Image (cartoon, rainbow, N blue to C red; front, side, top):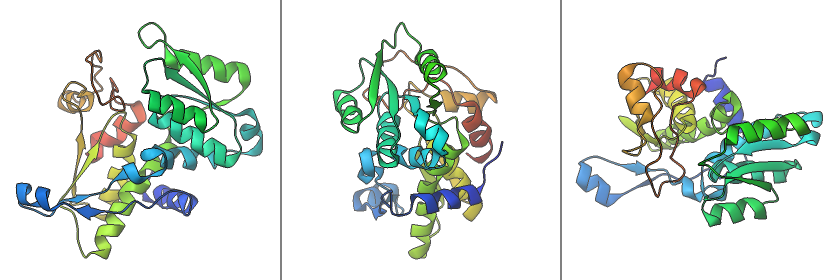
Length: 254
């Protein structure tokens, strides 16, 4: 399995006219604090308020008619759920999302309003992976992971591609690109795009202090699993171990 800049460019074509090409802005305050030009790409302006729609649509849009008729199933605490729900709605695909009972109400309601069926579970006693796998097995639906999928990663990578294209239009090449990191899909796809266009640009993954599985994995040279029981307001960044596919990329590019 492999993925390169061409896969990301092809994903960008599929997403053209469907996703929002979010802008990049400088922040004067950050410029002064850092002593450099700091550009921000607000993916909160993307459909569903998060980058996850990019990967979801790129993945679902490539399903054949038989697969579409059987539907999709995914598990998520919110952003991937809404990304899949919206992509499925646009493509006429039935979506079932396994979501924790303590997921933010806004994300639960958002997913449901987009037409997906929610299958609730208790994250302290049940395995969302097992539940989703059983649904897929019993219904024939396609299980779409949040980050362990090359098409998902390529879709998320369009964010990094846009960054480089938008900066190039300003005659700028970034010294560093900082990317939030949970499961590592956005980081993996975007780092491929950034490095393909500007090999000298450094890419950094940004994690929560108590959910630093990628940092620990980087230090030890192998995937590390953390406890993941520390309460946090960042519910979308609670991955406890890097994905196998995303780690194979991020361990080389980040």
